[in-house]
Length: 328
View 1 (cartoon, rainbow, N blue to C red):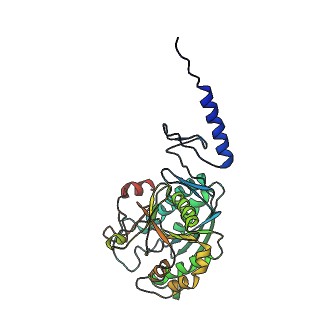
View 2 (tube, helix red, strand yellow):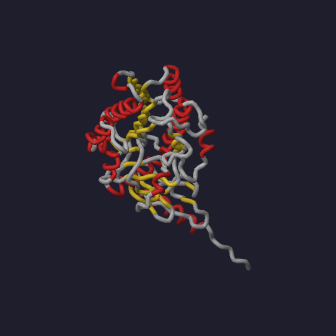
View 3 (cartoon, one colour):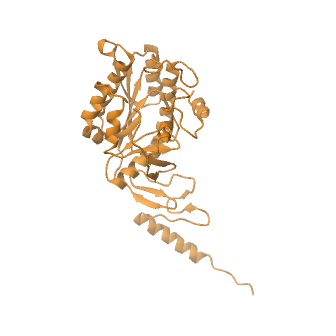
């Protein structure tokens, strides 16, 4: 007689175990299918829960103690100047306004992806422009308002204090730090020649929550993997984010993410950078990185659209043309 195997008992036990794990907040992994029955997710899904836990297959779970509630994106725009203090052409050799528009387009795409994952997040854009034609800045504001984002706009008039490109740049930087003091939580300072991957902001917020929870302190995050950092044999610590790696760095340009607490802590040094020109210009920021942790993604989450031969520009191992075309 053929033996009839009873499959009901194991299935029943599995269901009970899943319910118990849900009650206590644990996750199970079905090794045969790489499925997560407690959360009803597959291997390719986002496993982490914003504000609650970060899950990395092979490394386990990290409890999130630093929940992000607000994100302010402060974009400094000047569509009338190609490269500050330079006469070189940018990659793709378009008018400066085209880089500004594609920067905003990429941030819109990335923000929409972000709020799908971080459902309770409050997000606002601040646009700080100097010397941009009215038609250009109206186009930027229209792009954002059509998507329903909260917006505030500041225009820095060209006067004696903004009579040259560097003075104009420093004026927008100072205004951005002044605006940051009125923000509530996380702040992303962006220059208008950084085109972002769709997943950029989501990856950055997952990383911020995880790393600040691990180190029990606020941090700095970059969206760009700068090529010039590979010309220096500096030691780096490597951490795992949601879907990318991150490494510690000691230098960056002026596109970075941090918290209001960190801005308040280093406000005098940041404002000094915006009022007294140094060489390099970001010297004060680099001094802050000697005290605080700063992380850069591998590979890059954004493209800095400068000259193709610039060591501050094209990040290695990303599809530059694809990213440019996607944000037309």
